[in-house]
Length: 67
Image (cartoon, rainbow, N blue to C red; front, side, top):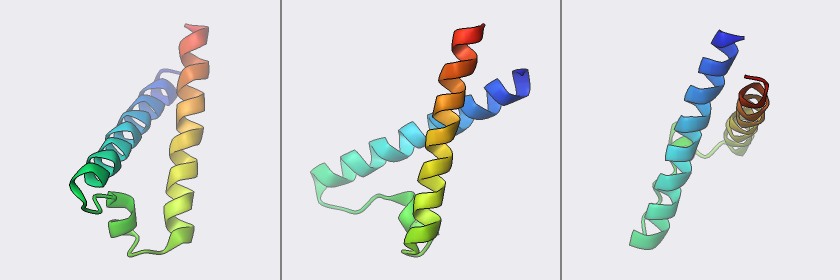
């Protein structure tokens, strides 16, 4: 359970940073979406990464509530 907690924490933290970059990019008028850049605009890959981050966030909340 410790490895699952650690993995979900890291992925959730990275997801939060990525969304923060998207928000900052919106304010300064630049596209700072790293996932879109890495996937070269392939929306299937991009959405899959976002779904994975969302699942890890739910797992992190669930495991945190058990501790």
